Length: 378
Image (tube, rainbow, N blue to C red; front, side, top):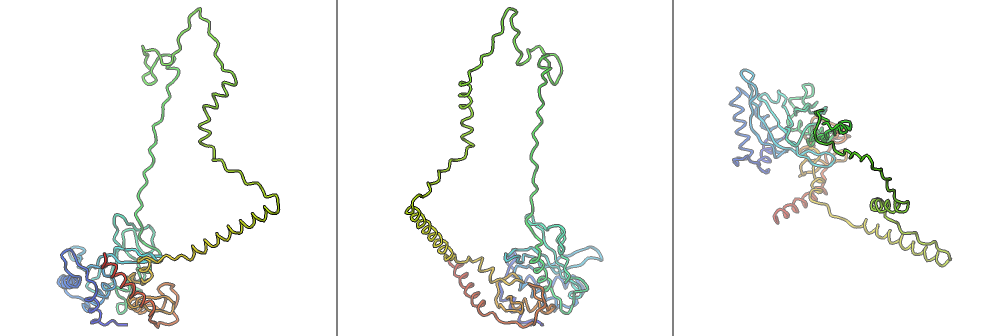
């Protein structure tokens, strides 16, 4: 399937224009970047194909900003066309914004494009990921020399493959903060009793003129030691209760009420059975009423329902494929150029016919009108 160049330019101009800090539209920014690329390199291999493919991917991902970047020095110096921004990718129905950088050389499409995942302060790449290394370099089978076909492969196909890889195993996660270990309290050095008895310091081991602490007074020569006063057993028991009663009250579980006495007569049993049946029926009625309650879905939930699993954007022209899933027409047509399998299940499709999903298209139209009215009220 070959895209119409005039149709792509028309879609690109009519789409929502993103601007840089100076208010310059993406279309003007792309023309400036393309002119700089032509001036920096002696010749472009296929300027028409480079323009078409870059505009195609910018129309699919509307937050990509075009600039140029120069790599290397001396004879190895090379100026590349750079598309940088955040693209939306899905994982288990949830949408995530992934910061990416796309680099396209002057010899494109003979030269395979490059893709990098930009690491931020809050995001990191998990180690040992099969498609992206910890530095953000992307390694897709689609980008190898054996799989890249300069007549059919494109930058948009690369981004579709990247979105599928994210849907299988995300290559971004929240950066994990290191956990600081708990401080270890300093060891308590006991005061040696032998130094206390000798009146010396435990650290200096020098004699001290001060009396040792807790030193017992020497008894008088004629004094008779008195016998210790031992309280009687009832008094000691009362003191123990007064001491430990608040602690026992704190840890004692709350007392549970005693169960009601079992019914004795047939009349009491019949009354209890009818009351239990009424309670069971009321519980079932409450459960049925709770299940009948319906909470309307939020705008975010509706947006996830209407999102294309390939581009991560709300669909405009949804179509069915043989796998039973719905995709944006342009995205699935670009996928079917190089594949005969389903983007979701990876199984071989029975055919490549596309069927318009009229019901979902009508729902998406109502959703866009409702979102526009909500934005107007705000």
